[in-house]
Image 1 (cartoon, rainbow, N blue to C red):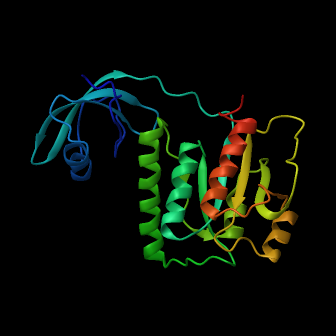
Image 2 (spheres, helix red, strand yellow):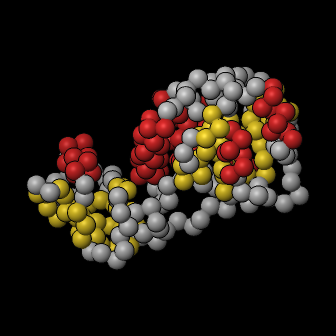
Length: 249
């Protein structure tokens, strides 16, 4: 019986820019050939993270890497009607990866990794750059799996106040914390954008919450139970999309 699985999606390292053939990197070639076990002529979907997505097939494997031939263009998804800016307290490796992966799947526009008073993880500049590249790869893989065309922009790690200053003006500001209030705010109109803050393993300090309140954030309680930081990020993003975004209705 033939498999009816859809072709795998692959995020390219460079823009397509109207080209009909592309050479892939060694890492991408190994992924196709060894992980996915795709043979010459196998179909796949490629996208460049800039809006272009095409049907494609593997033309050949050679010493320099795989060469693919591009086919029909695939219409891009409509842009999300809710832009979510996730400020995530930097957590330990697997937890941070999970938060970024699920935020990407749930359509977050930008992710701001933030150092907070209770952050367990502190990154030196060279290690911070390596982690940023790793997080971008995690987001790229999540795009491949979820069908998303545009990876979220992931900012370099910064102290919490720097992340707050970098947020766009005019967005609804929510911080998710077990000491917060319920119910959720009910804006007169659906917001176009929301800044969602989630603390690290130790949560936000009382002083940080006071400062966030003075900066226009409303503290929201997700439930009676205490959630891990990566679970809280996923639940917050899902609830935002369910209330005002792509999961609405």
